Image (tube, rainbow, N blue to C red; front, top):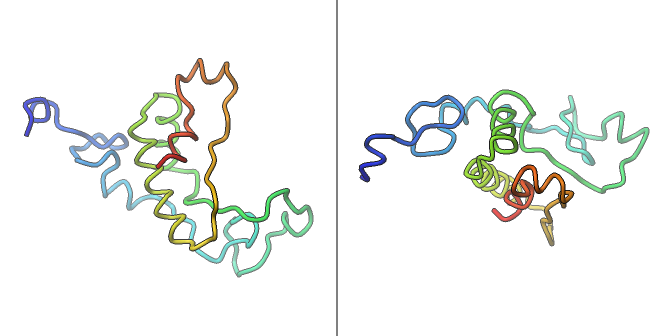
Length: 136
């Protein structure tokens, strides 16, 4: 163990408890995962399998999308800290979670491509968050 880790042990970036992981197992257990049934197009939670009202009445310009979790609690805090507190290690951790989730979907995916940032946003933030997520 390094002296630095002894004096300043690594902590969960959500609850601040000592943890070897960026997000501890207690915090991860509180994530509101989106499990089935979901809309076949946009991935929104539904009561039963099929299409949501929005996709039935106004079909989107994409064929299929899926979210890992609801944007609340732990995930919301993690994303905000990643984006605005420049916590790249959170992005790497979230990217790995997303990667495992995507593999579990067993979709035939050719590419995962980051969304480009404007030069101004890139200058302000210092890095492209979607690039970090896509790389993992």
